[in-house]
Image 1 (cartoon, rainbow, N blue to C red):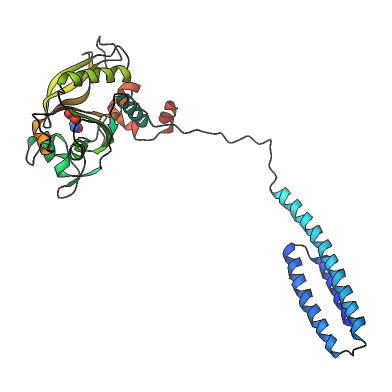
Image 2: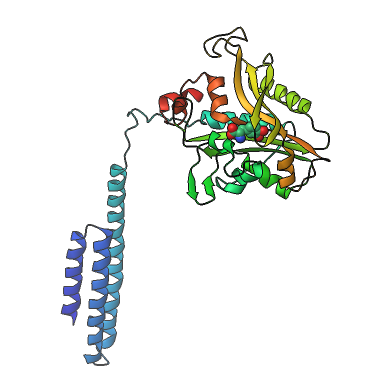
Amino acid sequence: MQENIRALREKTLAALREAESSRALYELKVGFQSELKKVMSGMRELSKEERPAFGKLVNELKESMEEAFEGRAAEIREKEMQAKYAAERIDVTMPGRKFRPGALHPVTIVKNQLIDIFAGMGFKVYEGPEVETDYYNFTALNTPEDHPARDMQDTFYIADKLLLRTQTSAGQIRVMEQEKPPIKILSPGRVFRSDDDATHSPMFHQMEGLVVDRNITLCDLQGMLAEFARRMFDSSTKVRLRPSYFPFTEPSVEVDLSCAECGGKGCRLCKGTGWIEVLGAGMVNRKVLENCNIDPDEYTGFAFGMGIERIAMLKYGINNIRALFENDERFLGQFR
Ligand code: DAH
């Protein structure tokens, strides 16, 4: 019996010296405990007189081994910490990684600025869906099927009567169907047309505005546009309205701003005219109001729609719309 105890002690101490990791130590401990149990079960074979002495020896073994395990565990912990420190060491003399902050895209900058300007005049923002029905995008805007104005915009159809909206004007109808005048909304968003050249992209952004109330006139439109032009460009910017045609407005106007580049004297940007066309607008057509159950004898309204890329191109002197979609960091970094 005593021999067994001694052998277990020797064997365990030898193994302890070899154990190099917490894991090995743990396994060793489990092994030791099960062997200790085996030794203790030998107690049954002893006589009553022999048992106390044996019990004492076993206790001594347990205690001394516990101490030995604890001692070795501390050594291993220390070693493992050192190894961890070594592995995680950082070279503080290495050059740092350059921190490159992001920036808003120029289209987003201009969109936010437009929202700021018009929110200051009491407009609320409404965002309509990008996938629209033929009704909202065309029919309700006084552009029924086989109306020639449909050809003004090359439309992407998804299914019969379902399309990618070609204009944020579609949102006008959605708002007028849901709200009673007074209405004063601004509707920014993506629009889609089968169009692609230096000044046209198949996807671009528009900002729509709509005001409906009693006694709204073309003068209100002109005054508001003048304020917009001064705030968006500079305080000397002038506004000019030219007669035009849109099915959903009557009368319709095309709006020019005095050229910011030459101050109206005529240059390459404004093609010598001194004016730059920036948006379409007009008085909401009676038929459109009727389509939304708004009485055109009681209420009138004006609407306008502009291309956000176009405004950004004018404001920042960008001559190719593609620069706004290529995500070239050398270009985008200039707006930081
Ligand atoms: N929806 C027109 C377009 O995409 C722009 C426009 C013109 C919007 C006149 C309007 C408007 O609200 O009154 O070309």
